[in-house]
Figure 1 (cartoon, one colour):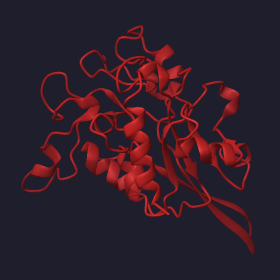
Figure 2 (tube, one colour):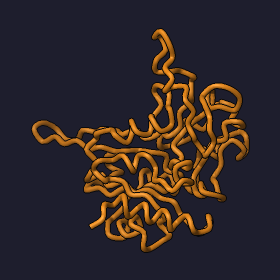
Figure 3 (tube, helix red, strand yellow):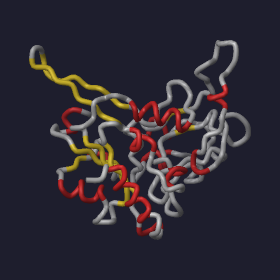
Length: 248
């Protein structure tokens, strides 16, 4: 049987042949497999050259019960790429700095245009999932003899070669997960999906009934976070627990 990454790569190639309006990018995370190794978090930080205290893909850890009956659970929480994103409604630029994309590779995601973001930060508390963070311009190697080159090398967010300093760059602006649009455009899965050693992540076009993510979603009872918020997220979870009772 093929590794699920191989299957998802094949699904991705098929999805990229379809028109943007025909695709529906989605992610499914099987919490029964997650071990909180944080490989996805670190891989995302490396891929996007993220500064200190910024994680597009955090993994939260929770403890339930009382001694001696105590259990722990783990929750990776990327941007939900909501179909009804409250962060967009909160942005005073009226859809210029952040919006629900309908075109191109990133159709279905909620991107940020660093050139048009005014750095007001109003979108940050508007997100019920804590998916947005302001870039304060810090570096991991501040206070050492020199800022290391790996922090100043360009990343390729949204398909554009960019460093963190200079005109129209992310410092001073809101930042978030974007399903690795730049990788999708080159036929690669999001970095968090590729890196997970437990194969807890599924990604692809859920509109394709033959895709692995569609099959896994159909075969399991899926849940979404904070359903009562009405945000219509595109990140689904499979869990033995009721998420609404654990993660409020």
